[in-house]
Image: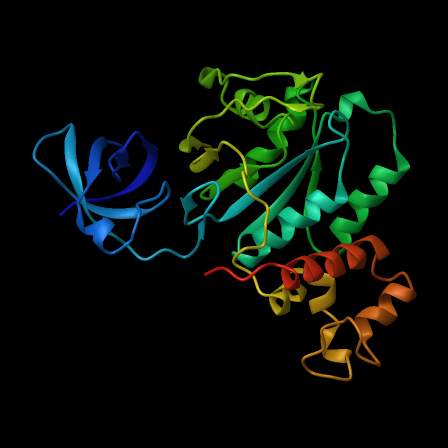
Length: 292
């Protein structure tokens, strides 16, 4: 049986791309509903086709990860697009994305867009430098300068990437520069709401520079529904790197004595804003109502 990757899911149909570049429109067999498995964009699948155009998905192969909102699987990398202005750069929202992405073992790439709207800003540059220091790749871009955007291309090669970030930051504009023939619809910021108008309606993988990039409707939920409070500390790399210096092996970095993380925060070796976000995320999970 042939195998392929689902590159688009729309109205109950799954579009499966095979190694030779052919796309077959498939439906899922009823067995998926019985087993509570929903094929996702990014899935590798086994399918059966009676002709060149239509077929049925028979099996979803093992996934290395999956996101729920947006629904996509087997992601290598998340390009987190945050604007310098309009909307204003938000470290708490970026950290929320980073924790969610880290929890799925997906590599983040931080892209700060709309740099053309901002004069040299020491505070923003300081944030960018700090994220680089703790191990993240950070690039600065502007859709007014297409050559700047092309610095993303090497990161896309041979990877499946998802572009994420708050609405109105320029995600579709970024894709339009990387592949102008896409002509993706973009909208300006809503002056009434102060946020971007949603422009992408479904998940689809597009081939760019020998890799796949997903333009998604955005993260409709940024809640830590699948995480425990204990898991959050593992998603802060600067905590992980010194946690073995804590007195207690299972230190939560909250109230324990002789905590290396808290000491590093007090010494400003770890940014206080990151620790503040960590505490608030843990409290949010602990306050979460149990799901039945």
